[in-house]
Length: 418
Ligand code: GDP
Image 1 (cartoon, protein in one colour):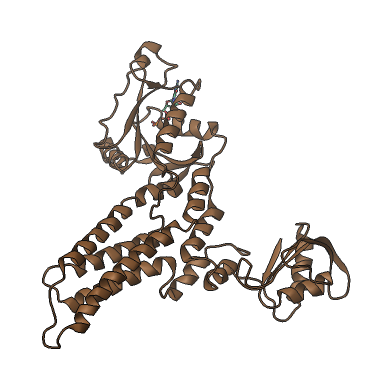
Image 2 (cartoon, rainbow, N blue to C red):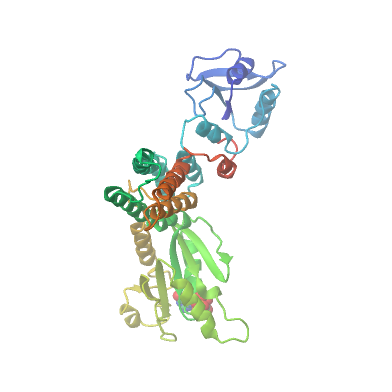
């Protein structure tokens, strides 16, 4: 589908399809170039402004998707002097600039386009439903209410007698709002997980079978986000789609001691990495040739006995999770348990979480300004100014307040045609 937006859209339909069909009605037409030669036959749609995606007059040409057809169609469209190819994200940018969507909606749309797992898709759909704009708008209005109350006190005070004290009820309101923002911010990690993946780390002494488990996971999963383990800083990572949730499994076997140093250093670094994980799989072999390492404190851990094909089932039976990457025994159960843990960390449907670093930064800023607005020993004029700044930070999230400088960065991440 080739989509066009701008005042010449109707004229383009007339030139290529002969006449312009009724607004928003699909019409089957022969599309011809300037010499009258047929390009293709397909569906044409015309959207008069402002009822279109961008808010401008738009037209769509649905043709057979082969490269030559699309090239010929684009060639015929671009022959018209006011027509050029769109920049990446330009349709969405125009939709935002024409008030068709907030900046939050645009970012949620970008996430939807990039969603790789079911959890990401659902999260992006929910984030695009306008609830964040509503919440941040409500907070912003609350700040503006408090700010105007302070401004009124300043306005009505005697020049020489500017009141210094913040009325107790306003102070309570600011503190309450700051609390709500910081509570909201604490959900960012959970939101991050949807995109970055539930963080699982494999931990164990050398040769217990960590790499073999990672390879077995890669081989068994039908829906793999990356099918080759990648390497980042000594770590080997695999991103899996486990029952709709993105799971990032990290093999710490890559962490080796620098040459000449003892092996313990490598293990200490692996334990350090594991301490940041959301789930650690501690591995030890059934033949007793190595023990489980000490699990990092405060992290959810599963003890997994490996190589159960080598030893009697008796030693494995002591632990709930036991596997063999040679026979495949125990792997489906282990995968199901990990998938269950990952799913439990997914945001609940309808939960409004901050989901972008840009929003988090602005929310933190707003929180910090609110804290300054109610700090001890500050004059009322300063408090008023801090509240204004807090309201502006919140306004920038949905794009209500000057965001011109951000737009290039946000929309250039889209692909062309979106
Ligand atoms: P890592 O150092 O912990 O990553 O361990 P590896 O995955 O490299 O495995 C060490 C050795 O154990 C290799 O020779 C593997 O082939 C072997 N191994 C791994 N898993 C199993 C298993 O389930 N059964 C058997 N019999 N051997 C295994």
